[in-house]
Figure 1 (cartoon, rainbow, N blue to C red):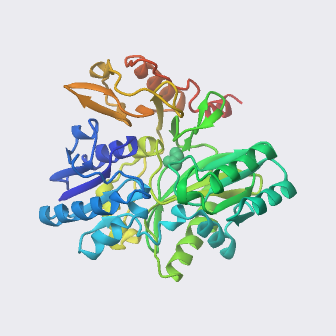
Figure 2 (cartoon, protein in one colour; figure 1 turned 90 degrees about the vertical axis):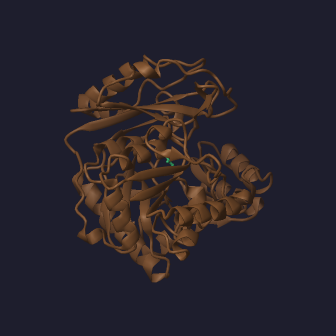
Figure 3 (cartoon, rainbow, N blue to C red; figure 1 turned 120 degrees about the horizontal axis):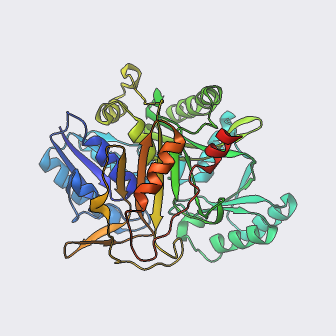
Length: 437
Ligand code: GLY
């Protein structure tokens, strides 16, 4: 088979790594790809399908890539980032007769339009925080004053993972609303703002591979969004992750499948926009059970870097079954007896301004079948690997238990350096504390 992967980040490196293990793959291409992905695929840097959904250039890039994919007779396209999904890549490829893994733009609204997603959940009784949507800041501020803090403010559209603010004070919440609606910090993505109740609990990420009607779930994971140890400081794209997440017991998983995934798939089907691809359920495990924090229409980053090493099944089979509507006939095998950890090495200053182009050393000395270094933001300049993003590398380690995986990931990290390299030293602390407690 000829497979095309869309994207360039750490998540897509993990997807490329796993897709390349399939005996069904003859050629793997990645648009645009990265130096890490280049170990598994032929990269196509001429296609900038990694642009943001708000960038008018994305549509033309998708058209150009479609022309290339038709000429190359690509058998299956796997889409990593939400922006390309929200911009309708799957709609266009499918209309041209190409098989594609991912939701259509209408189904991707579950992530790209948080107001739509919250209304949908409320309509069908999926457990989630109570909310209201606003288009003017004065009314939103009035509501925040009535409700008090802590409270959550979210830009309804796509905001590169930065659009959700957990405000611990009323002032913080009011400032967030004004910045989104009046100052347009997220452009049109902040024209509608969702204000929702703060939920107490521990978060978990659950991924369902869906075919419009049926689904299978992968190993559960937990990520660490905050930059600082102890989950403090501003949110990032994710500073590390581990799997499985012990907070997600068998019973809670069953409840999440019955109370969240199944009803959402039925409702999207009823609306005429069946959901295919991966449905990422960001859950808060509260005293009353799992409640939805957010849905995403794609794999998580860096959760993918820990769930794929624990997937025994062929990823190509799963993506194909999702696109063809045959998930019910597909058996999924997970390696639930082992644990995986990913620690992200980031640029100094991230998630604010940071320097790029710094030389990365030591990668050649990383070896072992239980460790993989996924590239999140790197590039080659004159045969030299350098930093090219806020999140630079993700050290993933797999072991027979979580403490073993944590030790191995941190040991691996010691071999690698770049100026200002920053990483959290407490990845998986909640699960490790649970083991001790
Ligand atoms: N790890 C959070 C995300 O992928 O959105």
